[in-house]
Image (tube, rainbow, N blue to C red; front, side, top):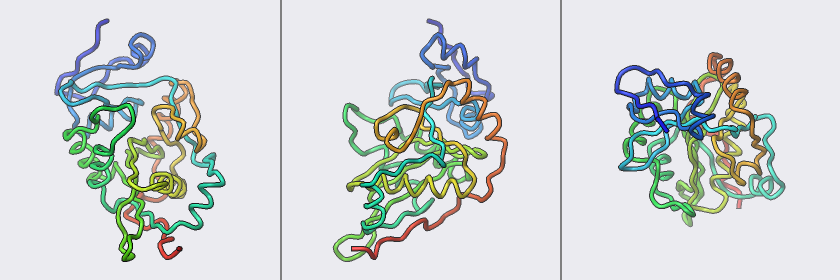
Length: 243
């Protein structure tokens, strides 16, 4: 199997349809993680995914798992948690801490992380440019001081949010962050959330799988549309006084 190799110049990618049909979605290897290349990749439904010691691998998975914000499902248990649990949810409060936590949190069946140091630095650059965003869930400790309990981050281009990873060090923290984040993203004008891979966790929120061709068609339209409101540093919910 011949795998295309990218050099360190330009932002062009090989034919994605061929990658999906012949290489299980592996588009190419190599290149770099410059902001220009990353943004060009996401606009085509391509994302980097590799481990330390490997070359950069670029993927376009099919079918694609997506979530339409207006179709999000909040189960009864989570609805109760959102009403009664003490917490606060913020946007873009501590992007670096969120991506580091996503990299270091233990995951079942995984040895190590794909969120390497080079990946972290690349997405921090995107965050500084306004294209990557974090959402944080905070729980109060015994003294009432809020501490980071979970969160998620992703990339935004136009009216699409490309979810990358989430973490939780306290029960329900990532679920709370995700539920509040989706509502806020919808208010900002996001019409499509890319979840990349199908998981039971995301399916419970109402994610669905679509053909990659349909996903690309949506990207061509939505990534060129401006947001209604910028995704800013913001307090999304403050339920921390609940007990």
